[in-house]
Amino acid sequence: MVSYRVARRVFILTVCGAAIVTAVLVLSGHVLVGSTAVLAERSLREARRASLRPPTPARPLPSSSELDCQSDALSHEEVSSAVPSCSISTRRSARTREEAHGHRAARRLKIYPKVKFRSHGDRKRILITAGRVRRSHLADRLMLEGHEVPCLAKRVGARILIASTSEVYGDPRLHPSPSPTGDTSTQSVQQCSTQLLHQYKAKLRALEKKLTAIELRAGSKFYPKVKFRSHGDRKRILITGGAGFVGSHLADRLMLEGHEVTVVDNLYTGRKRNVEQWLGHENFELFIHDIINTFYAGSLAKRVGARILIASTSEVYGDPEVHPQPESYWGHVNPIGPRACYDEAKRVAETLAFAYQKQSNVSIGIARIFNTYGPRMHNNDGRVVSNFVLQALQNKTLTIYGSGEQTRSFQYVSDLVEGLVALMESGHTGPVNLGNPVEHTIEEFAHIIRQTVGGTSEVEYLDAVEDDPQKRKPDIRRAKELLNWEPKVPLSEGIPKTVEFFKNELSRKGHSERNRFDPLVDWSHITDGL
Image (cartoon, rainbow, N blue to C red; front, side, top):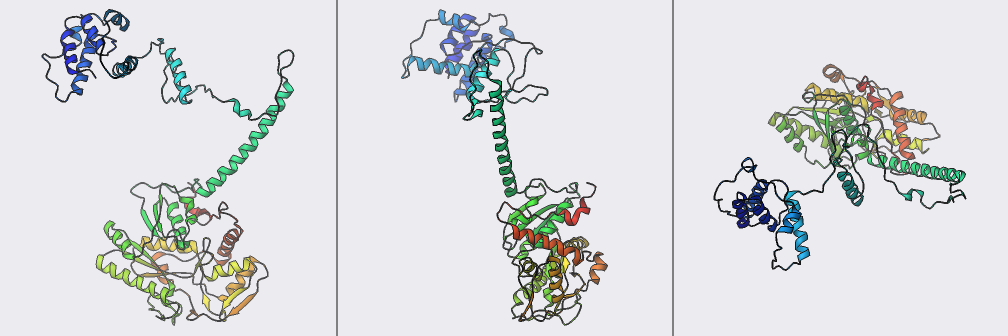
């Protein structure tokens, strides 16, 4: 770095003459290009930045216009021949000192090699994407030719030169030898080219298989078409348990509608592959987390002014004495029986939700969900539908607990999701039954499954389960009046979809074999016309 004393001397001597200034700057380590006035200004600025408290110059720095009358600086070679070398005592060798001197000077004054001048029409813009050594040498060559070499070029109609290598031939089995006339054998060249073509086609097919396997493991990035919504029309919706059976279908429905969906799931019974079709989508987020307390969601809803929908169950009615069961029925539940943990937990959840609504004035809706079936059911969830379907597909005995005369009403999952969305949008605060009022005995349902799947499965009757409800049928008059909702998918349409899903699930042999259920199978009407 040039000292302030030297820089000030340079400034003072600038007015005396170009030769003296040139000599001083050369001794200070500068290489001059341009007028001495500009160089003097640069030296003074560098000295001021280097010193903590530089003294004020004796007089203001003259501008370049004031010094236009002075002669231009001498070239580096002329000054070097005119000024005697200066011996300075230092630990570094003279060669090292000269190299460092040159690097500092080049950094300060931006001295470039001389390049050929080209007009705008004659000058080319060239992009080099080679290795570091090749790039630097090629860039030097093109710069000396007067061309522009940008770091990134985007031009239409340009020509590309690919720098390949002889390694593309690998270990060639055919080596064409020159003929006596010096020409290569045409037939040998064609044979070699054909073999190489077959080899690289085989490698390309292998790479395509690997890429397909990677895409399957990572999840497809070709998302279903979703409806576009503006910022004011688009909702931000949080689904706890959204990677489970019902939650994943609800996420599909809301995503296709164009809303922003955030799924929180601990994956105890849910699976990430239930929502993998949306992973990476700009409107979708998945968090693996356990929300233990319902009031965590309640406090969030209170802060942002959102509405909460509680997914309750028909188990709150227990083994009912009223048939069908309306929302006003309080239920008949054994509080210490084997089903009490689930039954009473749902009843307490409803109680806490209504208490929180009264205390915090948060809008809350409660859906009492009856038996639901469809794709993405867990194999080992213990539900009657999954049990019968898996047993029939494996030609095992269909097991019925009890006489088989107990009744259930089964709704397809898409009907339930439509009811949940309608209840969420209605603003109704009381509980609403969501189920299919068509009632079947367990024995009838077992024969329906066996007939749909086929096979030779027999039906076996085992001992009845304690506190197993004998009757289950929803009264959906409130849902019809308030939500204009009722189930539409019959068993003859929903059961085959469910059987196909479980059949694909049983045929899986590895993680790369995915069993995806396309959301558009049930909700193609949402995206029609997009």
